Length: 440
Image (cartoon, rainbow, N blue to C red; front, side, top):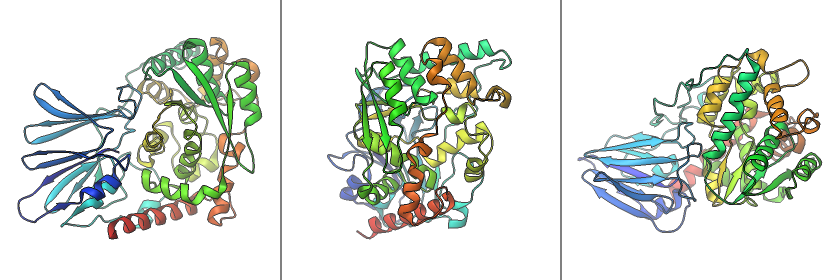
């Protein structure tokens, strides 16, 4: 992501390698802007827009479409007297890292950009054991000993919405309202892509979009591998919506290069996150400038809380902890989408939806036959998805494409769900890539 702020001390000479900064800040090419203030140097790429408000200089970072949105990753930077003030989106999708060295401070959304600062301390990693531990973590977890993740105090808690989850009709009305507000907050882009598996999460996004915002042009994308796909389910639903479906076949010959690119670009330390971003990357290559996903619905509506293997793999077992985990893993990171000149958004991933989800009880999610039952009921009753599609049996995306097995096979692992081993290999690769950049 596109800026590096350095506050210099007075004692030890410091050098910032401009060419290296260009290669370490998204989009990793093009012109680099620079502003100098007393004690501060600020470097920024084309994805930043300079602003002057109330005599204050600043940057807006809204992604390729350069439009603010309540549910998109974004940040602002304002320089006030001798202080830099950052704000980010409420869901903390946009990261801010702070490096406190012996003779300077630095801030950036991309920790790797600190590698361009020479003449001081080195970035140091926490132990592999600490980074790879499968346990509940603070959302501002950092894999470094001398770099911290900054979170705004306003992000948590998100319980502004008050509901009585025992009143199913009231809850469903809130789901409808949350969907409407999410779509109203989207960038006003005419051509929209929905990543469609045919399951309730992505089908609700497409169904709502067609019904409520049909004046926009929609297309759907679905992913398949050599081991499996969800083309049939996605095709059936897209046909019912009269929306064209493009079937994307994953090219395994590019897997290693994609892994290296994603691990470094998104600074990934978690094996499950790597799998998520690999699949997203395949779809983003063919997306329009606005891509909509159903991601996060499983985390909010209890879709994962009954899966013991998943909970064991992530080390947490509550809706709040699953939400917080997405912050430090970076699985909703905008890096990839921005690299493809695209904005990727999940309508579910909004403060309003999270406020709703945190007040639901475990019994609100499962009716004895179906998970995410409130979402399914809402989708059917609102006309987004017919009951034929809302209640059909379907595998989760990773199981449908068997992408987890593709990655395991590539890493030489027998178990498709060996996420501890995948995380170990992911972290080792990230460290290697950081070292290579440091020595160049």
